Image 1 (cartoon, rainbow over the protein chains, first blue to last red):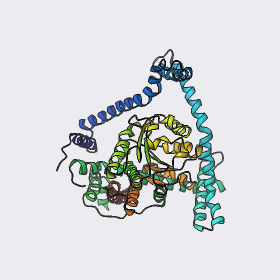
Image 2 (image 1 turned 180 degrees about the vertical axis):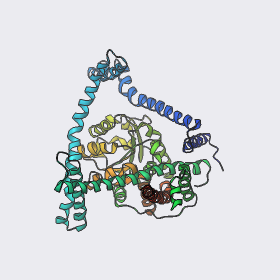
Image 3 (image 1 turned 120 degrees about the vertical axis):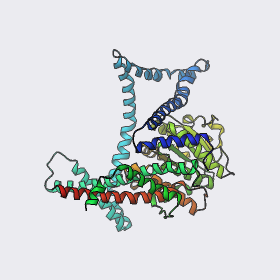
Image 4 (image 1 turned 135 degrees about the horizontal axis):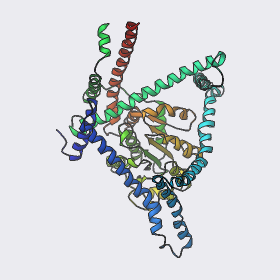
Length: 222
Length: 281
């Protein structure tokens, strides 16, 4: 009835060791937890080394001389030394005297990320979403679909209410007070939806482990 | 009402046991509750189904690790099965270092169920790439430079499914199944910058964050949590595309019974709280 695969047994026993924390903290749980952290870190380092460092830095540097006399290829391969050295500057975080040197790679990363992200994020997350807020109430006049108009109005009221709740430059009285109260209701509904989804997510993880124990380990279900 | 106040002080381990029972019993003795398919899941299914066989491929990015496997792996399996059953070429990649084994497992396990599909022609594992959104930009510029080889080390120019892909224009549909906010990067870079068509499969925790992107059309379809996986499995079964065990659908009975129990806990907890407050007053 039980699995004969030794790896399934190890996975099952480690799962039970983690579940034992529900009763109380114990050495089995701590062993499984530390094992998981250690293996994850080791696995991550190896994967990053062979998928990033070796093809993008080590190999081009090792092949540097081999590309001769193709001068352009030599230059291209040789250029990886620049990001390589910039990356190595991060290790100066361990030195009190030279720790300021890590600002150099950081500034390169921040500059590049901002340059790449800011215009596109603005377009995708602000302009497009603002359009989407008004899209719902605009649709019915074209298509004559009342449901979308009602839906669009709810979205519009929710967005304006929520934004006014986070407007702190004036006291929440009068129109702003009403609007911010409407905003609170929408925020609460949002939190409720998120909480419900979170419960479902956590239960799914439990179900996944129980399915593994019942299916792969003790073969109780197929 | 004193018994209710006593109930309020119940040992939390008894609640854990009740939740365990609510999960285990429906798994062993299924209740057979129906799974309703939401329009967003249907849109994702249709987006895949519309692609003509052996033309432009689907790019499936499995951006998650084993920590969210129960929620997301059934979705990935279902999408891969759908493509293989319809002979829609599928390229699987991952931006999560822990996703390599899961991607390999999903692809090879599904391929065994469809013996007439060929590796390199109908499916390929492009593997893991470091860089997150930089990889998305890089695919938009030159796919061949981003993935010079497949995961097994074969040059992409020698793998038939990969040979003719230059950028997103040569990809029919991008699907990201993700356990993090990386979906947002796909929306920003693949959709906004390179006008790719994007669908997403996400964990239930982050579902509420992504509905606005459906309304704006930045996402074409969406699968949310284990329920999303169960919906896709249901659609595959309805269209006679897969007869494999439906892992997510099996879990839906357990989710429903546990949810009912949690609702009861919340109601009792609130009654206990208000009774306790009244007693204090």
